[in-house]
Amino acid sequence: MDETHTCLRDQILPHHRQADAESLGNILKSMFVVDRIYRPKEIISDMADRYRIDISYTQAWRAKTYVINALQGSPEESFGILREYCHNLELKNPGTMVRIDVDLENRFKFFFMCMGCSIRGFQQFCRPVICIDASHLKGKYLGSFFIAVAKDGNNQIYPLAFGIGHKEGLDTWTPFLTYLRMCIGDLPDLTIISDRHHSIIAAVANVMPHARHGFCNFHIKGNMRSQFKNTKHIEGIFWRAAKAYRLTDFQAAMNRIARVNPAAAIYLTDIGYDRWARAHFGGWRYNIMTTNIAESFNALTRTARALPITILVEFLRSTLQHWFFNRRNMAGERSHPLTPWAEDKLARHVFKFVNMIVKPINMQQYEVHDSRQQVFIRKIHQIVSSDIDTYNIMAGRQAFAINYQEGAYRFHDAYQFRVHMSLRTKMDTLTVIRNKLTFSQRAIFRTTCFGHLLDLVEPRFSAVFIQAMLLRMINRGNPDREMWFRINGVEFRFSPVEFALVTGLIFGEDMDMSSYVDCTDTPRLREQYFPNIHRLLSHGEIEEAFDNEVWGDNDDDAVKFAVLCI
Image (tube, one colour):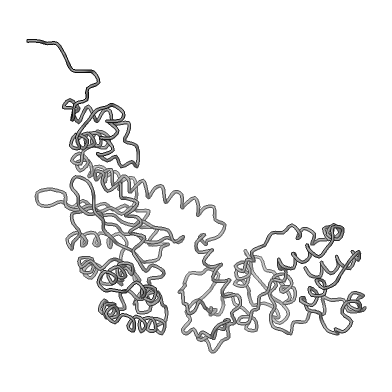
């Protein structure tokens, strides 16, 4: 037998038989980094480029499986340690509820987990609206991944409960919702938002009959687009109908849909207005009109859903730990109870409301005027006390009114419904001053108490601060001559004129400012520049005179007028 080896060293034969799963796996271990999806085609390409080894798709798949099992454990091993992991999880996290259901042969049937921190936070601080959804698992045994999420006070995703079982159906949704109800209890105003899967509808009706069940409008829109032609141009009208607060606005939008596409209007009617329209919904949906927050969390777990079950559960636990730690730190840095989202939303609403005029009709009706129309708001139940503990958001064209309970902080009736807000210092005035004054005149102006305004960038007026101060107004003394505020336990007194000078708020048009103006002598500037005006000068008249006058070298008068314009 001739034992002489005749194969060339650089010869590459297809599908090396010696490249078994273990050998390839030991080479590939370093390439499996966190959050990387390493596909068999990429393994084939890397082995050919780096090691000049030609392997088949089957070899690449087996090598990948070997590495994953070596790093994470096999799916069978993961199921074996799941019960021990859950015992320690409940032991170290008070209030956590974990359930593992098995069949008569002691085989895995369903898994449920709800962390104690999620339960406490939802019960005490979150809006009682829960979005539920299911997605597919991608591991060896497949199945479905069930989630229940809400929104926290900063309008962020708030994970509540998780479940793992076989395909989505009544026998999986029923235990998931049953365990969820055991965790959160029977909340009086609970709302469930989901898609229109028949098993979800049946399970919610059986397990949580007290809860209001609404449908995801994004799914309804998608179904409407797939079933009917030419619906894209009515999608905007559909969203207007879904988000409308008032029945009149909802009906107007539905009438437009019926005229353009009668079949789509019949489809929406058959679903039931109370399932998708905010105006007809029997409970509170707030601003949660879709299950997008559930879909977003499903996207986050896209890679993790291919992991063995215990590793997947650990991924969920570590995600909650990371999120809650960061949010707790953010909340600890806040100087007041409002979250950034709520503060921004309140500021935008106050900016819209600032020029509205609210007139009382009776103790429960108020007439709200804005620049476009009159809005009537009925049955006001919002009460503001030293600690705001009861609130209902009542909206009609972004208008609102607040009725104050006797004994709580309240405005004086003369001021409560007539507030005109103006900001006297305007950026265009500073621009005129910069352009009008000469270099030497600007130097003189900088020596005044207003000189720093020349370097001022455009400020943002904080109407929230003014509103917060007004909410702390109390009844004391003579309300026609004194305004009292209680802030952090300290009481402050202003006259109406002093308050107007500080805040820019003017109450009524008959405010007497004469006590703040020395009128004993006729000012020279008035005689020289306003000889024909024998009344109080307006700010606009002073600005106009300053802008029209050619000052030249008259530095003294130019700077005086610039100060008056401020």
